[in-house]
Image (cartoon, rainbow, N blue to C red; front, side, top):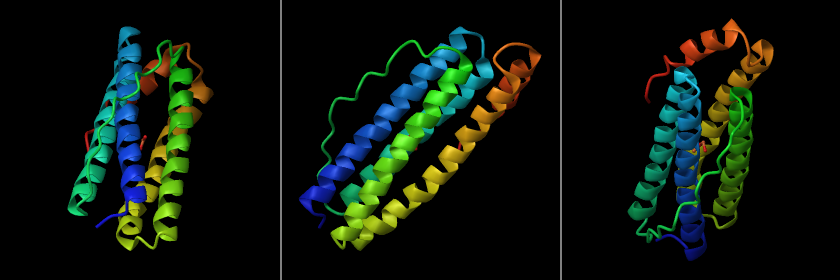
Length: 164
Ligand code: OFO
């Protein structure tokens, strides 16, 4: 059985992962509207990953006999700016998620909830990958700028992202 405090914290994280999915879907549509189909594709795949992150936590919570407490998902902002800003905002968002995951991990450890700690290890590792992946895109975008042919080359590269 999971503690009420850990249950609440996991429910909050589930909501946040779903909000991340909404955010990336909105960003994807923003890029698509500007004909950046590769960036749009990458963000849409990312939205799917965020939903998968939420579902993985749901499965864990239910396996521990916790109660799923679904709440309204925050509407994403609008007006993301150019592609560089979109990915800078993505990186900032992921850094925020990392901080939340670390706090959850710390909570599990302080409650001696070893099962949650083990489950959250996957998210700690995942956040390293998330920040690294997005950071690389931001670096490439800064290198090429958001005008000229190189950005279209980057766009075509990101169009190749597969689903995981
Ligand atoms: Fe779920 O990792 Fe991004 O937000």
